[in-house]
Image 1 (cartoon, rainbow, N blue to C red):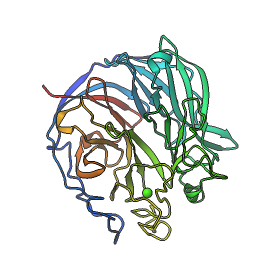
Image 2: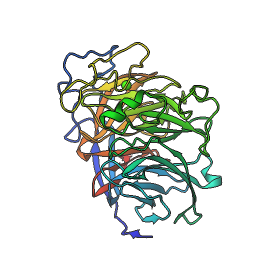
Image 3: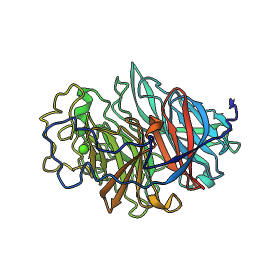
Image 4: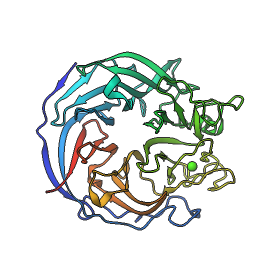
Length: 399
Ligand SMILES: [Ca+2]
């Protein structure tokens, strides 16, 4: 157990939509040449500008590569740090380490990743953690642990691993792994395809969990209405497939549909609304190109039976977490989707009409790498920056 020094909240007024903290979206040429969107405004939607005045509060600094944040009902937050710490943080920045987290493979992109509360947390105090789990012989894979947060908030008890991505792989790349609950208290887990050439192909194989969205019950069992429960040889946890590395997921506040963000190749980040049983194309179809400059596969962007992304970015935004602005967030952003960006950094705001993107704004780009964000019960925008001196920041509407 460790108590971090109280950080005096430092405030700074930022007006979004103008000044140096922002840059116009879509001002750079695409990486991949000769590719065309499948429909109008599938990429490079018109630039929009909300000019919301925000006050920045530094709640905590000195965090080691924070990956995720989650709000507790008492107003405190849980924050994961990728090297393997779970912190409980008061709104004023008093931080205490929570003991009992799983052993993690803390190398490259691996480590302690997402955290979410059980839908009935107020009654059962159960939380879920996703992480890169060492599986022996140099291999690892994404796993999900459920555990009870002790009444004093200082430790985890009753730990149980409820999901293991299979097969394990010798890789430090592409773990996913955002955790979100659907309307029926089933848990979506987003899973990467482990990054290398061989496992990449397995994003198309229903016999593996690589490059998939899976859906499980709160005890890890398989919901009977999952799409592949009757398919011979298919992993029954699979919800959708053909994904690359999804680190963002959220449930739409009105439609209650799952929305996801995934890291594509150079020039191919995607926004999707994954439907049960459907194929999202990776690595057969994709926008963008390999980091070597070579095409991915045959270099095609569309094929029958494979779903188009709702929206894509070339150049990329390197998306982390995402959150919808529902009812108590800044009114200029109502109904919008906010996405954290690792590169170029800051926050990407999308205006939506149904599931179509109608406008894009880049906010707070001066922050650098932002790994996760969410709107708090206070309606403020909270986020964590990804570095060895990572920060937990709160942005309130300026008075
Ligand atoms: Ca895709």
